[in-house]
Amino acid sequence: MSALILFVGWCILFVVAWPVALLALVLFPLVWLVALPFRLLGVAVEGVFALLRAIVLLPARMLGHRG
Image (tube, rainbow, N blue to C red; front, side, top):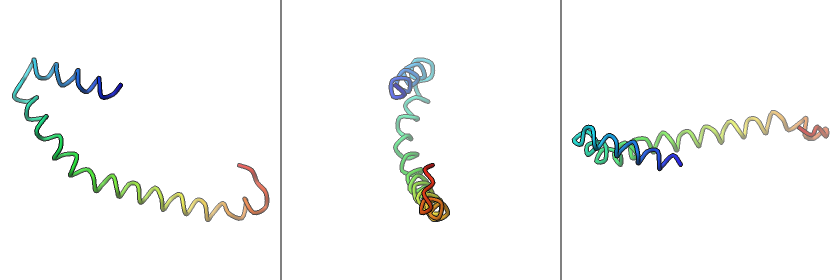
């Protein structure tokens, strides 16, 4: 659904200001490549927080708490 909304928005931008729409079409892959390391960093940080949470909650799980 979000891809459809993105496409319709791009079509509207193309009708209103076609040079900006073409520039957005060209720059989108570059922005995606620049954002990729930050996404990977976010996944790594999320994994570290999940590990810390599991370590902190381990005693409660060992005593039989069902959270």
